[in-house]
Image (cartoon, rainbow, N blue to C red; front, side, top):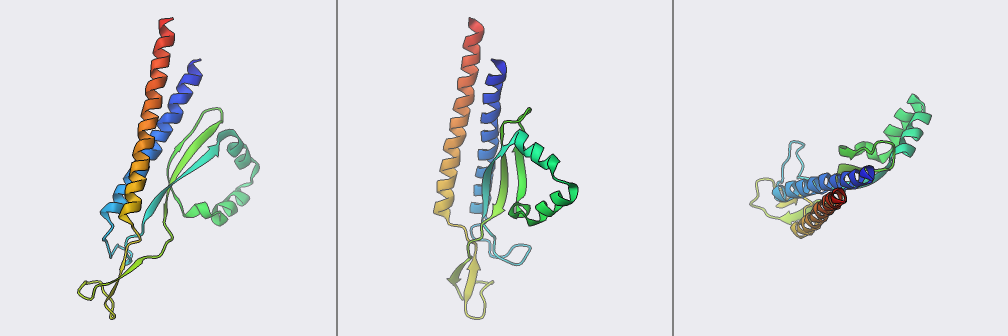
Length: 167
């Protein structure tokens, strides 16, 4: 019984970590919505939190079947090599875990006519970040609601555990 209960709490805790990361990414996007110059010399590129399910034991067994050379080749050719892995929730003994990564949004930068802007080109156009504040606020509300749902699930698990101890 306790393994199932603690498993439910681990799943919700993984969701809490993922949604907190998503809210951090959204906050970073909103803070840089008007940043026209980064260290790379380009406008700020919107970031996205990407959630991915990982089948624990099956993934581990597949990784051990691959040779080191094949594994490094897979790492170079898989599109996920461009993603920054932020957090992974491991479930002992296999099962489903979550992998949360931050990936750049590939959409085009906005072009705005503002001849007085210091970063304007000779035609008066400025490349602006591909951040849409409305989209970011919707993402923030969604992440906030999912965070609240995970907190509620943890509280329900704690209440069930407490009730079970009273028996």
